[in-house]
Amino acid sequence: MNNPRQNEPALPAWMNGAGGAASSGRPAKMGFLRRTMRNISSVFENDLYSETYASKPGLLQSVDPRAKIAAFLCLMIFSGCTQSLAALTVLAAAPLFYGAASGIRLKDFFRRVWLTVPLLVLVFSLFGTSSLFLGGKPLVTLIPPGVFGTWSGLFFTAPGIAAAFRIALRTGVSISFAVLLLMTARWRQITAAFASMRLPQTAVAVLDMAYRYIFFLSEAAREMFEARFLRTVGKIPTSESRRRTGSSVAILFLKSHAAGEEVYDAMRCRGYSGNFRRLRNSRLGTADFIFLLFNLILLIFLSLIR
Image 1 (tube, helix red, strand yellow):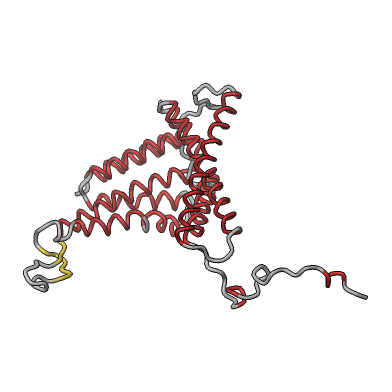
Image 2: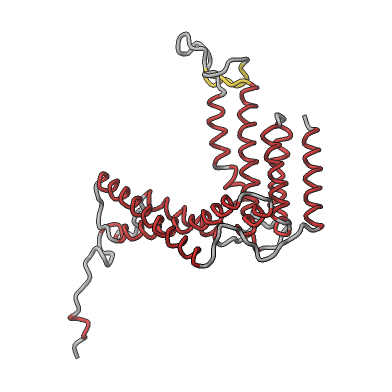
């Protein structure tokens, strides 16, 4: 008896994995742009949209967002004003304590906060405080003087290194407290806190909608680049790739504009008048005042450090 599947057409070799990278057992390489878009989408979806840590029990999760905003803002302002490296070091350790008490994995928190922007700021700040731009007594010499004739060499001074670390610590402290606020409170709670703190209603509405549009644009961009990847066979020239990327960005802009018009019309049909409304009015509790008092004591202690 004949097998009816013998008469079915066979798939091409490039679709069933015969030949190329698939036949050698090695996975196909993912392009830089596609890999970047996938990483950005995963960061937004996992860390922001899912609000993993905001739903867990912890120290900061039990504190009202208004108290956290007030306390963290004061600490960030203090970090920008103080000149004490010791105070900045202690202040940099405070987010780690709050994160551990809130159930946040310190390894991931440290990697995503301190090994990104503050590290880059430190590298560029060290370059800006070297002997190429500032003079003084050498503390660390990389290239001794006289190597290239009359050149005075390349070295770092103690005030220059201290200034570079001061800038990096200030950046890391500000990012740490901002990340803590976003990870331990839902965005609607943060915008409600801004509204209750008498922030302009227009600014609150823009923040609320911008947060939602981040995920819309991220998802739309990911779908567009995935569709482009599935419809592209073989390697295309670099100029053609740039042209397609530019066209995709333009289409994404048009889609976001059209979606914004539709969302605004839907909001107007549902009675939106520009005012930010809350279902319930919350009040600061005992835990919130204790949290504020603790941070006030921390500020006083930091101001005494020299």
